[in-house]
Image (cartoon, rainbow, N blue to C red; front, side, top):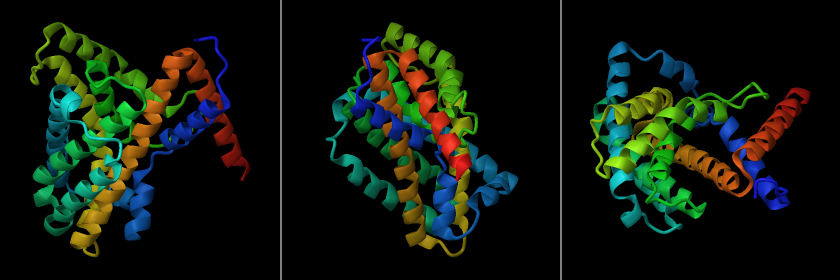
Length: 273
C-alpha cells in the first residue's frame, strides 16, 4: 500500500490533522476565555507553584499510564463518550477554580485519566488496537504533543519533531511491556517516558493553573477552563491517530512527505495574509 495514491478524502483528513497538530495553542483559548495572557502568567508562577505543578503533572501521567496499560481494552466506552468525558473533566475543573492550587494534586490526576480514556476512544475509532502496548503509549504521548508551541519551520514539523524525540523511549517501553507481560510502573524505561511527556505536558498545565488562579475565574470559570483543556487534547488526539491510520495505509514516509507539504502550504498562506 505504500505506493498507493492518497485519496481525496484521506488528504483532506490529513489537512485537518495538520491544522490541529501544528497550531496546538491552549494558551490562545484560555486567553480568550479569561481575557488575560495566561501564557505570560503561567511562565511567571512562583517557584512553589511550579514545583507543585511538576509533582501533580508527573502523578497525573503515572496514573494515566497505569490506566492505559492495564484497563483500556476492557473498559473503554463507546465512541459517543467524547461529550461525556468533556462533562466529567469540566466538573473536576470546578474544584480547581474553587480551591486553586491546593486542589491540583487531586484534580489533575483525575482530569488526566478522564482525558486518557477519551483519547483512547479516539484512537480506537481510528483503527488502533488498544491491547497493543504501542497504542497505549501513543495515547499517553498525546499529552506531549499537545504541550508544545506551534511549529514555524515548514521543512520539519513540530509534530514529527516531538514524535522523533519520544520514538526511542516509546519503542523501548513497548518492547519492555511486551517481553515482561507485567507492567512495573517503577521500571526505568517507563519512568523515562513519563518524564519526557511531563516536560511538555507541564507547560499547558501551568497555563491551566494560571487561568484558574485568576480572581475572576472561580468554580464556574474553572469548569470552563477544564472544558477547553480536554477539548484541546481531544483535537490533538484526533490529528495524531489520523496520521497513524494514514501511515498504516500509505506508509510512514509517504504520509510524512505529504504532511510537510501541507504544513509548508499553510505557513506560506499565513505569511501572505
